[in-house]
Amino acid sequence: MKTNYGKILPITQQMQGSGDIITDDLRLIERLFMPIKKLLKERWL
Image (cartoon, rainbow, N blue to C red; front, side, top):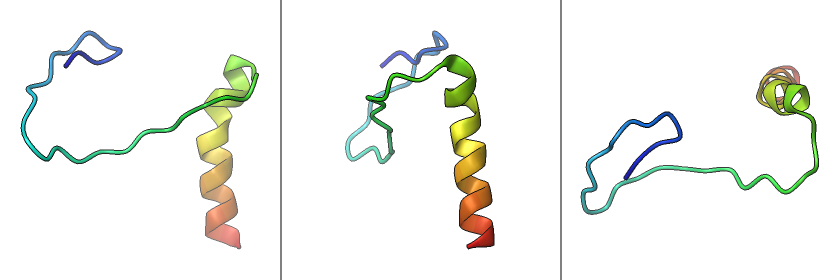
């Protein structure tokens, strides 16, 4: 398996992970700030 950064990862059975499927048409700057905004909302709610 190869990452977006070109790093090769060994494939092993029952690897755990998570991913995000992004379908919104957003600008790059909006995509960069979305995780920060989410963390701030979760912290103060």
